[in-house]
Image 1 (cartoon, helix red, strand yellow):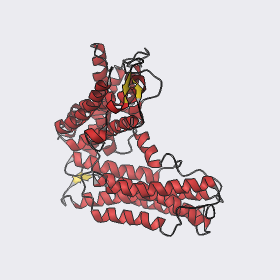
Image 2: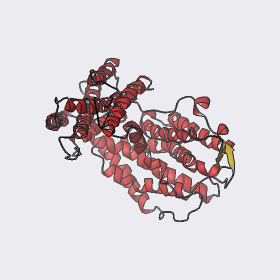
Image 3: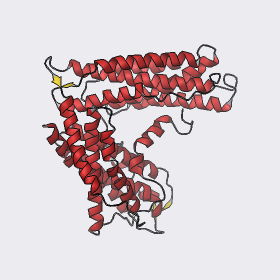
Image 4: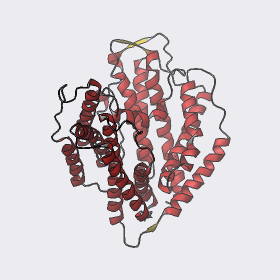
Length: 425
């Protein structure tokens, strides 16, 4: 479980955008030197565009409200009867107490976030994370009360693995529209990846509360992924005509075709940038994303994830080319004042929105664009910390994120068109 000061949901979200955020200390994009700007002049998302991210993930399946209500009930049931907030009498160890309280807070805020989510698919994901945090608390408390052991939870984990193996056997790549099929089956593949992964908690001291709590979180997370995957698959399959066939070969062939093209592009990639100018960090990260694109397709656990990886990988190559050509043309990414910062952010937002509109099948573009929108949201969070006068050099991280999101968004429509051609759509 994460520390009380950094929720697991926050850590997971940060990890999901790590490739776009770059590594610290690798060069800047501001041209301001020691120039300063007033924090009040920097972008304020709540004033300018409302809530971010501006694009969120959806799924072409009708997620029922009744399902979401049942997921909320699961969180409530797990926390019901637990004397939160704990005091020293209930949990004497201060470190353990803080870990349990942090998880309980994450579970509660996860439910609140789900209620405010901009898509039911996002709400489903947030509730899955909330129930995992709630189970962490419930398992730890049950151990303290002498009602649960680590072996009890390992037994439940084995049941989940067995259920996942049965689900994998009945899963078929049914579909009539390869785009819709790829989006749904990729989530099924993901759920099976998690439920069947060999990533159990380390064999710690079964006599410690936190060991049991971690097993509880793990069991609930795996079960949550499996429950969601089965639900989405069954809802999707029930919406198909009786004569719907398999799209597995179509998806595999499309991913392989794009992968072959990316292998050729990979051979033509210039060496990693080494000149530490103001754009080095940006170029380095985009180069790294492009270089890893083929591996992401090859390592996909199924043809549906491979198709989405193909969109993402081609986007990475096109974004790198776009940035490199702009730099070679002498057009940099630096800003000299607060107006330039605001323009960088608005440019990223506009690029993401335009890409969704311009993509021939917006649903296929949405996963990459949602990731770009999350990158913008993380950059926005940086500005919320600033007060008074701020040196422009301190804004390098958010500016790089805006530039990366812009380049990727502007590359998405072309990437989608290429993948759609291979899908025959």
